[in-house]
Length: 286
Length: 268
Image (cartoon, rainbow over all chains, first blue to last red; front, top):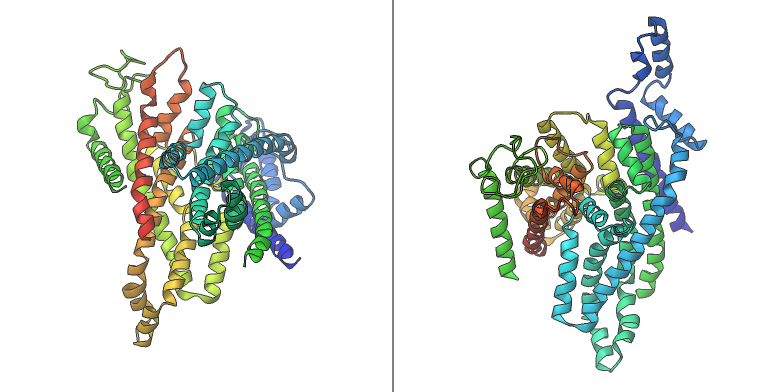
């Protein structure tokens, strides 16, 4: 219970500080407080002054942040300047799309990564090791956006790209961990006693590596979300990655900051969940 | 795998030299438009052909590689120095300073990297001169990429601070700056070196991603990002396989960095 509270406190602290950082960015960005309407030549001096005064109501940074937090508490994430739509509505429309892509990408990446990491450890064959390492190595060197482009050219489903981005990282880390665990004395003893390969893997190798793999699972969520930006842009998937890109091109900082905060919250939740599951596993190991 | 490492370093030296000598090797300037031959196939005059507005692809590849290969290490140096300063100070001073700095580092690491990067990039003007855009892109990479390295350096500095030889140095009257310069920094060098090498391919790939998204280096100055952006126009009908040369070079160069840094990682 204490750990749960500590994780919750950490998430709230990060979000509060992240919110402050975001509000600072928005407040200090060049062009803050300037309204496009001011360029309307039909407006007289008094109307322009009135517009400026209405924008100046946000006051200093502290006042602006309090106002921002107050809005946030009431579930109002503001309005996107470029898309002229409430941020909340945009998120409701696009978040499920990204979650679908990220979920599929993580499932594919982990299945491929773990399977190909287990293969050389179990087969103890140099050629399998070399081949899997080569595939993972090449994928590690291709930018996510280029992979997405290649998928578009091949008319393949763009969502799968996230899996190929997660895969090499999972593979590399898992292979090193499994290789190390497979050479531990208790595994060698188990093999010497005649236990089958599958049983050795399931009962003696995987339990040792589980805590580290869980930590990697938390990190891979953040990785998949980051890769969602170029993939959704190139493959034209209407998710929050594409929304973030549109916001960046339109310099819509309010929308960008809210998006960053939401993704931060999701990745923090994933990391905390991985941590909470990992700790009992570690304790049982000791 | 020693031969592979030697080959990787050799290839990187070769590519770097070719890029540095771009003005002598390239058939023309990266911005020069041969208006008579747009979308030309490879020829003696244009070994990699020309793009849709007649710019020589080989020249753009050489100059673009120069931008990425010179500035990614510069950004890596900046982030390694920041990491050394922040992580090293936290590890050396210890106590509440270390706790607070590491908490701040953890908070920074919690923010998704690419989202943070494009948010900060969007804060800065987008319609700037090509040279300013290069400086902004790589300076941002350097300034935002320190957190993970700072954690490693802090942990290492902490271990060093409690090691026997540092305790002995303290006991013999060495303190503060002398202890830092004579005993800690030389021992932190391998970790710093490894962090520097690890950052280079990461920054090269990030710049490529930003370039494809139109948030990296501005035209007409080429970089790997803007060169790879041309692949968007690739279709089976146009069938210009030489458009893939920048991608192949990028993959080979990043692989070479990975191969070369394995040894640095081990020694760290």
